[in-house]
Amino acid sequence: MITLNRSDSRSLQDQLVDQIRFLVASGRYRIGEWLPSTRSLAERLSISFHTVRKAYSQLASEGMLEAVPGNGYRVLEHRADTRGDRLERGAEVVQT
Image 1 (spheres, rainbow, N blue to C red):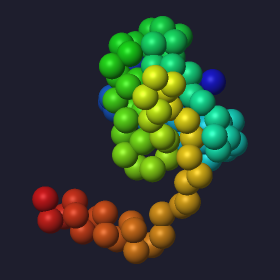
Image 2 (cartoon, one colour):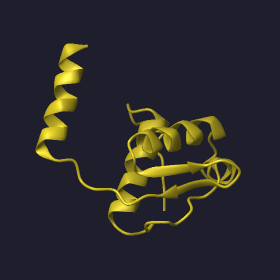
Image 3 (tube, rainbow, N blue to C red):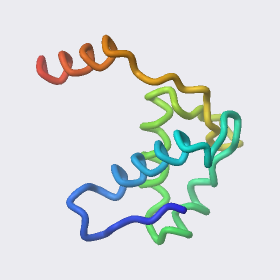
Image 4 (cartoon, one colour):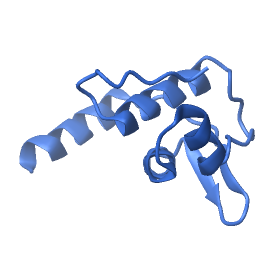
């Protein structure tokens, strides 16, 4: 179950991304399983479907989800980042 805290200093999108990551990691959403549509999840959470779409897109760019035009988003097999991946991402942040 996804719940968002509107008084949290983090954006609703960031909260949603974190919760979906947790649901995938904990097995609530399994590899190959379709996530709720952006509109249905937005309606359920009383937020803009654009916020859900942006969260799903972020997770897709990270390789956790796959966007299938006309069908939605489904969970991909996702490996944990290696130490090298984390260091490389940190170096990019420092450089920018």
